Amino acid sequence: MTATVQHTPDTRLQQHFRAAMGNVAGGVVVATTQDERGPHGTTVSAFTSLSIEPPMVLVALDVRSSLLDRLGVGSPLGVNVLAAHQDQVALRFATKGHDRFADVGWSSDHGAPALDDRHAWIAGRVARLVEGGDHVVVLVDVVHAEAGEQAPLTYWQRTFGTHHAF
Image 1 (spheres, one colour):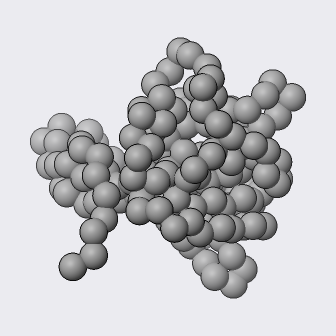
Image 2 (cartoon, rainbow, N blue to C red; image 1 turned 90 degrees about the horizontal axis):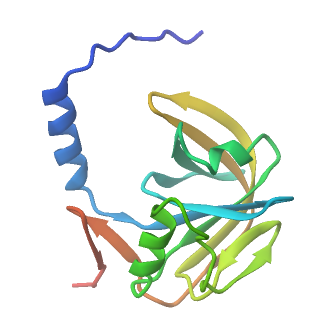
């Protein structure tokens, strides 16, 4: 049984929360799918591994996301972890109102668009959609994964960068 807590909007808390979360560095991901309307994708900021047995990841999508409109249980979903040089790809897929795949190399892999030259690739099928505030958490059963050699693109304090070992 799940209890739901009602939240009263607190603008000051939201500002502090946004600032605190901006201090957490994260990898930059483009989530993709493909259906009869063609390929579709969006840059997401909330992605993580969930389980090793069975292999699962999760992606959080804004409730207004056009990608979310194309997903249901069983839909293919690709997770493109971007490489350090792909900041323009991240911006392209974060911008609405144009063909995000124009001039971006990609191929279909396990039913989802896999972007060329990425840092890592995870292909899966949507297992479950879970509401969470102003986002929907997409639980994904992983069917294929590849790790690349390139440094990852990261995002920290509203700036793109990458990781360097000590």
